[in-house]
Length: 305
Image 1: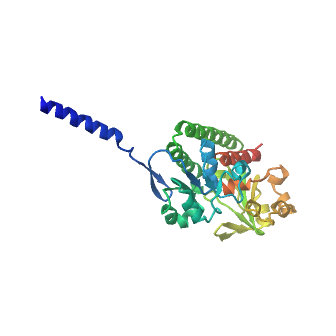
Image 2 (image 1 turned 90 degrees about the vertical axis):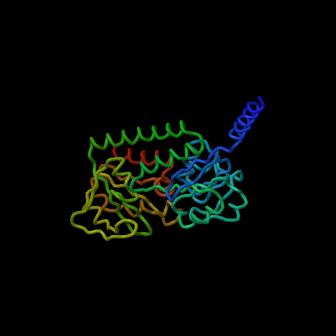
Image 3 (image 1 turned 180 degrees about the vertical axis):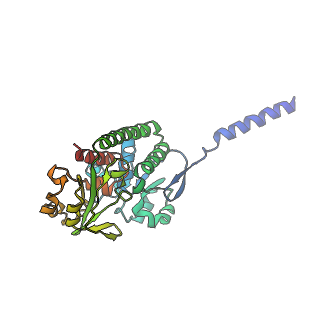
């Protein structure tokens, strides 16, 4: 009888020990490795606008983020209720240490300080592969939805964007328009191929690429340097223009004045009112966000109206 009671006591103690043991952390794959998450993070610092856009759509309320160049849809974070973490490329380490976050969500511009950030708190690197935009974005959305215990919400956001992408692609397949995507940057004009930071235009949205036959482009780190003669010779049905200077807050953001010339006006895009100035915040500052992706889709829908 004593043995039986002793066994019961041992089993009871074991059950108590199991129930009292902490929940095992789950490992998530991100853009620069893995991160172990134990429970739902409460003190979250977000260091980029694409990820901030998405966690905001999930209903997550971070405690800190960069505040310079906040996109219009994220202006609500520009109050004293939220701490300024630094810029989009540099952080205030003292501020981060003081905040004691239990999760830092960083973006590609922070890749060089990834190890420094890991010394402060667990880091999820939210880097969007622009050459495969939607697939990598979905992976991040799925991971963060699970991390914040908002799986149903995340699935709904993914389904919403997928439906819009499918509709845009279907329309484009029917009209078969050729698009030339260019960036205005400090007086230079660069064009971008289908496999580039603007792959969304061609891969997801389904535009065909427009290129010049008689005017050469010059290879460059950020796109190919082109001239207005190149644009005229390419004869795009749709001309998509990103004013980078305006996107990063430079007063020299004057792409509309720069592109108001006879060579551009000779293109089918200009003649059919299909010259579209892309939203700089969505395309350049907050790629991978829920609202920014919706803005990108809206920009491209304007090009095929």
